[in-house]
Image 1: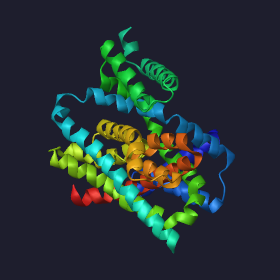
Image 2: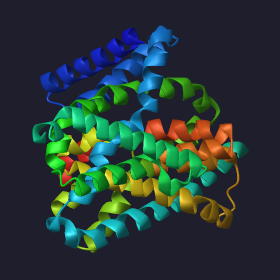
Image 3: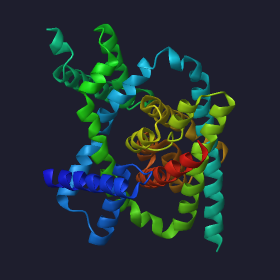
Image 4: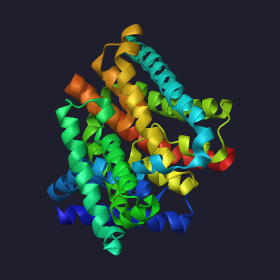
Length: 115
Length: 231
């Protein structure tokens, strides 16, 4: 499991290096994810250590997210006038995204089946 | 006494306790969307900090090393993405087009609505990542200079809206194919949507996690470039 964790950290470090060297607007961990993905495609399977290491970490995601999420309760008076726009954007935006994607994928899927 | 209350040991104890409490509530409630551990855990932490009259920013500094693990956790998402790759074969065209257009639609619709309602620059920046899974959203938002907590709040609220409305919406649209159903939910409502999709069927879950990874990767690549030009 620790060997798998080392692979993940190593990919992230490499990703951070590439980001700084090329001045890319992508975050280092995202570049690391793409590097690991390409690596897995070349290697052809997932090593046991990497499998358990990444699974443990993904399972713990709610724990890692709780502290930043708690900040919502401490945004302060500065954000008070932003709440209506925020709620409207998230609810209406998500509903319209679901409808849009549903109609789009059904159209593409039906067209795909016919040809 | 007081320096103990302001140190990392107190912060991690509080966080782990909140996590245990949140998992207990979530499993007891038969996995109700509103009690997702991130929501209930964050609420428990906030309540405890308020009751003990602790400063949130001190707490956040003390728990920084735990939040640091979001980096390797983002890298780890490459593993499930690689595992789902075989699903792409037969439906590659429709799925890839939907992800590309849908991910742009998800960001753009939120931005346009927020702008119409008079949101400020910081709020707009923090809304661009609402449809992608939280670890990626946090890293992207930090790079853009948005407010992390608003980004997290928008991601979680998006997930809750997605899973509470999809059954009704897709019945109206008459979309019952598990593959399409799961894919759209993973695209619009990321990890929270994916856990809901697995409750419908294994196929819906697999397509949902595929959409989650593709949307995350695509948005993480697309948004920073777009933000440089427009915002």
